[in-house]
Length: 85
Image 1 (tube, rainbow, N blue to C red):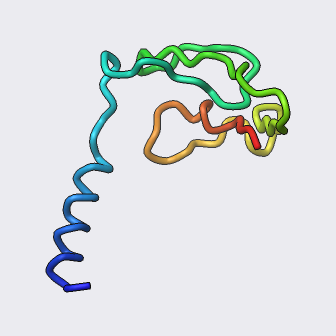
Image 2 (cartoon, helix red, strand yellow):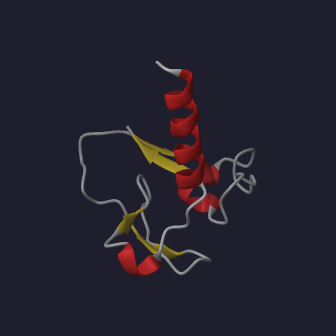
């Protein structure tokens, strides 16, 4: 790949990563693996995850070592404490 093309791609991607998500453009926000919905500090309503049945859930919110961790680049660390596989 041409070095100029790579530089342009890096500049474009670095600009995209810093963009905030606008609430009015979000149709639905689902906290994957979560058993309850919650409201974020940024005004998003995360719905509970009830659309899958044959999978495994990892919930780190009950883990004292993981709960309360400050995850960089987000004000809503709670959304990263549950996941579905």
